[in-house]
Image (tube, rainbow, N blue to C red; front, side, top):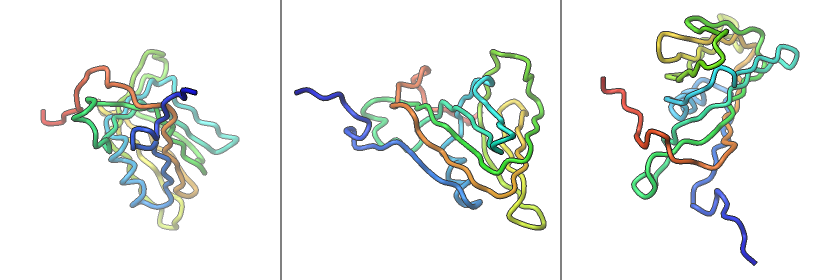
Amino acid sequence: MVEDARFEDGGEVPLNLGVLEDADLQVVSALIQDAVIPAAEMRYLPKERRFALLLNRFRWEDTGRDRHGAERVQSVMMFEHVMGVSSQGLDRGDPDLVLSILALSFTPDAEPPSGEVLVTLAGDGAIRLRVEALEAVLRDVTRPYGAPSGKVPDHSD
């Protein structure tokens, strides 16, 4: 009997990382730098107090790039305990808008654990999440695929 190949067969496993403190967020920030997001793939669910993004992230952690080239993978980034969302520099009415993440950061309030998560985007855009407490997860949801550009993102300019 022949079985389908699995993600794990390549010696690499999909990411499934939790965030409960700023140090965790900095690790995830590095892993999703240069992720691209169609604006239509962002959701704020106020009743569930959740904000989710479907990312096409570059696989910075990939150690086999010399074997198979640059890869991306679809991932879900989900923030919990979200009390409000605001943005700047985004045309939310543009259904074809594609965003690129530069970094994530957390600024606690004077009375932690509440604070603000800032999603800094290329092109001077940003998304600010008002959270009761920092809790998030980054989970890969597809197999890796060849990066359409075939290149590693470069910030040398």
